Image (cartoon, rainbow, N blue to C red):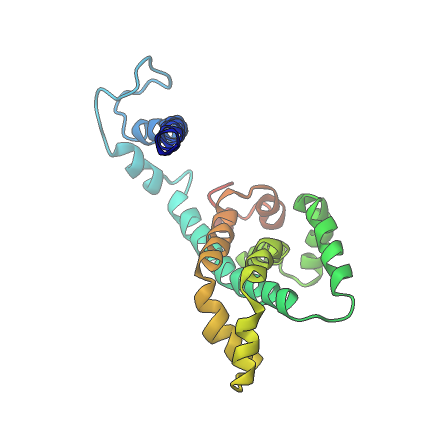
Amino acid sequence: MKRKKNLYLTGIYILLTVLAVIWLIPIIWIFLISFRGEGANAVPYFFPKTYTFNNHIKLFTSDAYPFGKWFINTFIVATCTCILSTLITVEMAYSLSRIKFKHRDGFLKLALVLNMFPGFMSMIAVYYILKALNLTQTLTSLVLVYSAEAALGFYIAKGFFDTIPYSLDESAMIDGATRLQIFTRITLPLSKPIIVYTALMAFMGPWVDFIFASVILGDVKDKYTVAL
């Protein structure tokens, strides 16, 4: 029985290793292309024959495409979005997991339905709201939009908080702890995995978004992000 289990685990590990290699090959290939000294766009070999840093130097020094400026813009937006959306998502998920209030189930169902629709469906409405607030063509508007969009992803964080026994909260309440103390001193230390996950997802969003950035920023190239 133990031998069969070991063979099964060995097969699983081999399969996962093969899948990991297949997944990594395109990433490694793109990384090597960035250092390739040959000028051809397509070559019949994997490893470059010559290596150079000129491609990276041109990327950050080109006058036609100020990638360095765009990179800084994206980093600022991603960092602010990461902090703001993580705070909102974690607090919202904890509240919905622990506090039983009227219409809570209805709100959860409504949020689930809203998550079924892609965010760009609200693009026009969001643009006119930002225009009325005089926030278009600014990095602040991107932070607000991305943070609001990320907050709808609280379901995963709520599911994690649901796995933390409520008896811990009750024990702390018996000892005189407030709801805030329970959240900061008990729940948060136990929730590091979901906090890291939420922060990473919020940080990665602005790096790959094209639609909202192109609509909100318009033709102001100094405010562009790397996705544009």
